[in-house]
Length: 254
Image (cartoon, rainbow, N blue to C red; front, side):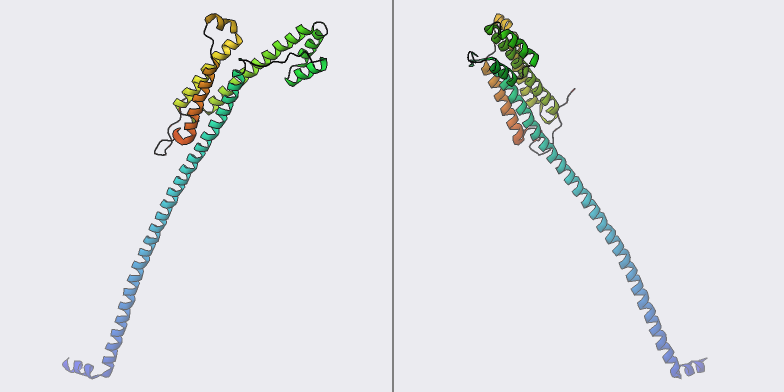
């Protein structure tokens, strides 16, 4: 056994084999180490990439939600401004038509009007052709009666136009009231109550005189001014957006 070992150690091939074996084992170790490191790096890279994708997805969702909120907020604010302008325009027109039904006004005497002039005047104010024919027939018999008849009808049409404009203003408010706060709606409702009272006395002046409580034109102007102040504040940002910039819940209707 000892002699065999000595012979083996004295054989140069033995050292070559051992050296080769060491090299092979070293290469195997290096391979395994690199494989393990590569596997760890690959798994780490996969996890890192998955984490990056998760963060990107979270950021995209957050950005989308923010953009959506900003878009909705901007759209709501734009609609608020449109609603305020539309309602104020309708209210301003209603005020003008109603207020002009009373007060000192210059009226034509129609003394210099001939038949054609009277027909043109009635056409201008959209008097129906049937009524025009009626007035013109009376004109040939009694000029004063014909002119008075025309004036009464023009006055009736004037009142009807004012009532129509008042109705349009109310409808405009009803259709847009979700964009206003309760306080703004209350101011507008007060304006309509003043105009309703005013029109009631216009339609039935004898009843108003008997009650001794005829409204003054100043009350209409004051009610309109209150609406101006409320809508101006609304447009300046004190409407449905609070100090924190968040939307407040709209007015409950129904």
